[in-house]
Image 1 (tube, rainbow, N blue to C red):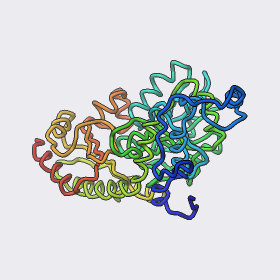
Image 2 (image 1 turned 180 degrees about the vertical axis):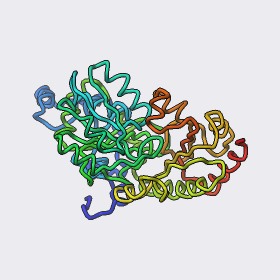
Image 3 (image 1 turned 135 degrees about the vertical axis):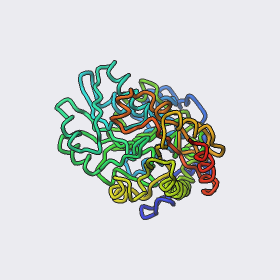
Length: 395
């Protein structure tokens, strides 16, 4: 029995009734099946009409997937969740449910490169206009909205430069124009930020990252009002086939058990790393919302419970200097993605954000010398020592 007064750490461990009442299994079962039998023909007909509870086919729903969706809704403080095959499929399902041909949505310009690629590449092909603005400037959001706008989408902290967006301010604009606000909460997770508490309507996760925590699965999650989640499942998730596999859902539930403790360690390590880099003579600028010099520091303190494990910095040099530095690291793995137990490093301009044109990179405040770190849970001194030996080789 889950108690409402339990703290987040307890909820992350115990989940939303994840134990199996039929068998007594403490760990949630993995229902690795594509289809489910009907008791008889009338039962099958009733299931398809929605007149009976049960499962039909795992593209539509699966008990393991359903358990994950309940847990994610519980941790975000939402009514219902939906699990997807990837973060991008979750975002696509959200937009294609809310928007028709001729509609538009407003988004922050500094977002994950794959999301930007979807917004500027795929969405225009189906007649949906993505209007990207500097979401740190609320007046730019306001100016981009018209009578065809169906959604406001932000990512905070933003990938890769850790911009902090005012969730309450964006929620007020969304209410004024009677449109929902969706917040990509991938960097912070519900352990460090719960946007629904600040007026957001929809939470987006690339669950591949910190929700998994182990770099062994790809998945996405939406959380919001039950009516909207039901609509997205009916209109987009099921007919398009964006479903998550039962095994991946099971892996994510396992990851959720340690989410709270992992995010604490990620945050502690990233703070030490950002402080070290801030005083290094070969570093031009450090982007981490936990530093008091970060322009979004006070805002982050007001809407986050911690500052997370992601940070970026600019080397005093050019694109080649940044890439050369990355290639010298030994503890860090040169790879895209983030949120693993291991420390990862990448050069955004040439990898994760290569979907941006040079002009768009400049507008999004992503420089050619920027390096992004996903700080892991290793010994913090080992992490710092590796960065230090790498910086020694930068001319």
